[in-house]
Length: 387
Image 1 (cartoon, rainbow, N blue to C red):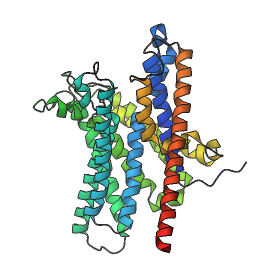
Image 2: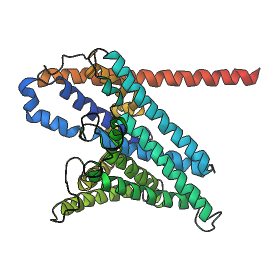
Image 3: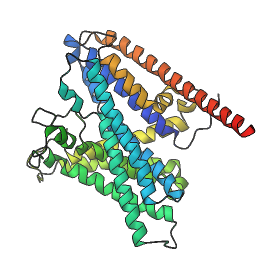
């Protein structure tokens, strides 16, 4: 069997699908395992796998943002036009995050607390991160055009990409670096908790909550993805091809060892050091692991089975927002297909299989409906031009 010819970045969709599957298993086992099953090594490994989806979604959002921004720059759009397009998309995702919270509150009316309306979930953070990336790109592009108008030598889009790459790396480092302070000694207590929670996930509990997704540190993953995306789209990376992805994975492993080395030093920069939740060293380790995952996805889609016929992960990755939105209600919500915290590992696994297959069917229906709509629109356009 010969694999279909993949696009150069199809492994990005595969990674997004992998994030969906990891999210499914984490949510299903967390919601349904009960009794002694919650204390097993199986449950522990499930929760460990659950540490990947959020960073992966944000990292991939950054890569996608870089792809869109690069295309807009190449089309010759002004910084204001680029900012308008990208920030608007981020605002739409953020609005969907708010709508999702309203939906969950309405469906759970009677037993869900009103404070759930202000919970910072991953959709909210992706939307805010995209708006922040849009603002960063606008500032860099506008400042660059003012400082170097029509500069000869280097191509304009290449020069812009280098500037944007540097700014993205800098902001990722700043966000990760100040997170421990914003969670402890620099907490913006003067803000109402509904706003402070976007900074450090304090919610209404007067203490930052590690199960939420505030801007600090989570937006740093989006900026890291943005930097990687601009690097990935550069001419040297295109010339290197698979070698570039391999070198990125080597750099990822190096980041992991650098972070471990820094963590072992006796020097203490922060008054309160929480390795697992706010440490910049743990952020570096996770970025390193994401770069290794990129190599695995690239190899699987180019030389493995990832592109032989139909790929469930690529399919889920193409509709990740939809399956995220829907599966939550059938796992945690009022319409959960299994009773909360009462299943064995086998029972919860059966439920997970049902969720996976159901979301895959939903994804396929969405793709077919969208394709049919596109065909109908194209047909009407042809009829209109003919008449």
